[in-house]
Length: 176
Image (tube, rainbow, N blue to C red; front, top):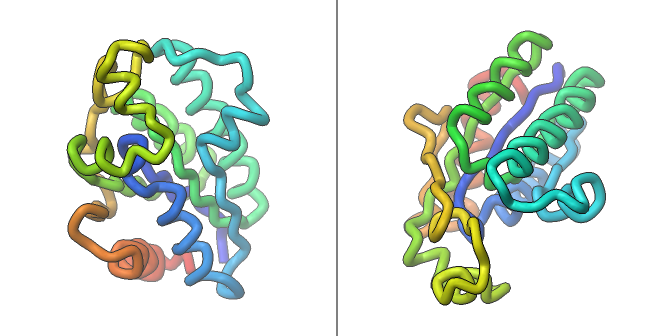
């Protein structure tokens, strides 16, 4: 199978990492696969970047670069990254297309009330109290995809249902 990039975008707490892990589990043994988690990349590859628009864009471009390198080696990459800005997502999709790699945008959709309720790290509470500046969805915008290849609703669907929709799309595209 040829490589490609599956870009899971959504608010913090929407379920991107959990979903990428589940899709990876469902596809185990069917293709070469790697999960790139936005939090891990920030820790190991983008340490020192802040949360300004410029720093967020640098982080997203770094992740997309690594994803393209892997896709070039016939790896299906599941990138779980907030990536809040539509223009940046469009730019990385274009770079992937130019490199000859399929780019599948997945909108991991859950309303702000739902993700704030899940808030396992306590970040939304801090952001709403003004203790965290530039927090996506609270004091910084999240520009939802207008035409994603797949949209999952993690507030309404089970993990298996959401992952199944993604796997089905990848199969239909011939990526698996």
